[in-house]
Amino acid sequence: MVKKFALIFGIVYVLVGIMGFIPGLVTPPEAPEALPADTGHGQLLGIFPVNLWHNLVHLAIGVWGIIAAKSFGAAVSYARANTVIFGALTILGLFPVTNVLFGLAPIYGNDIWLHLLNTLVAGYFGFGPPARQKAEPMHHRPQ
Image (cartoon, rainbow, N blue to C red; front, side, top):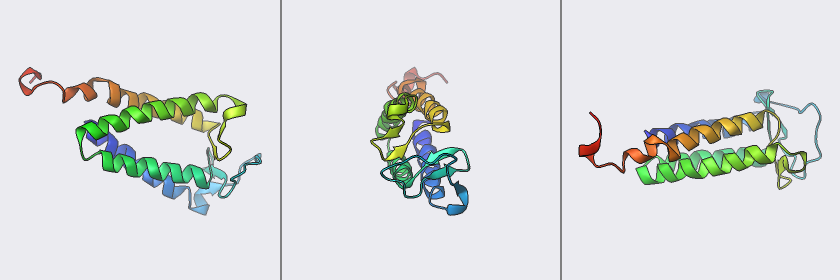
């Protein structure tokens, strides 16, 4: 189940990363910020702030998930790392002074609740019952 999570999460993030490069899917921001890296800055699907760096991060997280889906241990590590990463992004996005990650990627607005949702889902797969499932010997698993 954790391997499926990593694969699905990975595929979704690769697709989101690609979508961020399609001009018809990215609208100009309502109030453009002065980002040091403003190439491709806009709202993906009109609601999620993105730019070039944000899209590249989405692609990297997606490729990482697809690769991690090949083994149980890698998939659990991927889920756990994403819990920490997206948890931190959720918190940073709440504060105006930190809502643009290192001045490169916007992490405010609707990204906050999306990052929180990702944190909760990744946390379930990384630390919840699915992550402990493989650790149990086969004869202890309920039928």
